[in-house]
Amino acid sequence: MQQPMPHQLMGYDRAITMFSPDGRLLQVEYAKKTVRQGSTAIGIVCKEGVVLITDKRIVDSLVVPEAVEKIYQIDDHIGATASGILSDARVLIERAQLRAQQHRVTYDTPIDTITIVKDMCNLKQICTQSGGLRPFGVSILLAGIDESGPKLFETDPTGIFFQYKATVIGEGEPEIEESLRKEYRDDMNLNDALKLGLKVIYRFLDKDFSVERIDMAYIKTSDKKFVKLKRPEIEKAVEDVRKSQPKQPKGKEQ
Image (cartoon, rainbow, N blue to C red):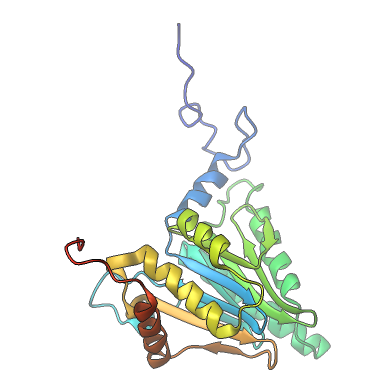
């Protein structure tokens, strides 16, 4: 009896506009797999604002760490980070920055975070149904402060978006997401949120962890200003997290 052929061999993944028999767009699913192979990015909402913590995954000692950008400022009150193909992210981020500037010039008010999210996801969605295009191979976390308070959104390659209290994209998503579920609290202050994000990345990367790989930023509800932490501030936060981690018993080191 002839065995059924995998969908890939039957050509259902050759065009973005072609559904497989079980109702899947395989090119979009491949794009989502690309995101899961990207470096880790975390967003956390707290009572004082919203924070972004990310791994820049610098694996070459000759690379200048400060030259690798993984957290972006969209407007004074909105920031973003990404996982997946960062060149795809750059195109979407620059479009969002332009959209925010146009809104300020036209209406003399800051743009809502959800407006940026919807505009970005509309473009992503178009790339899932148009021949000759490929999906954006990137997920983006957008964090901002609106009139109603701090907001955190995750967009994926399909053009879908969700609002979160805390979320993670990229490598290690299942493990870190489980840690966030267990340790996240609604009453956390800004410092607690930064430490939580740093702690779960520290635990996941383990021996590969280094200060040079980490980028951190926050936006406070009080002043609605995007602030990116400098290297000395990150080093101090990392040292505090290292001290808080339980020490392994002697003889247990790998």
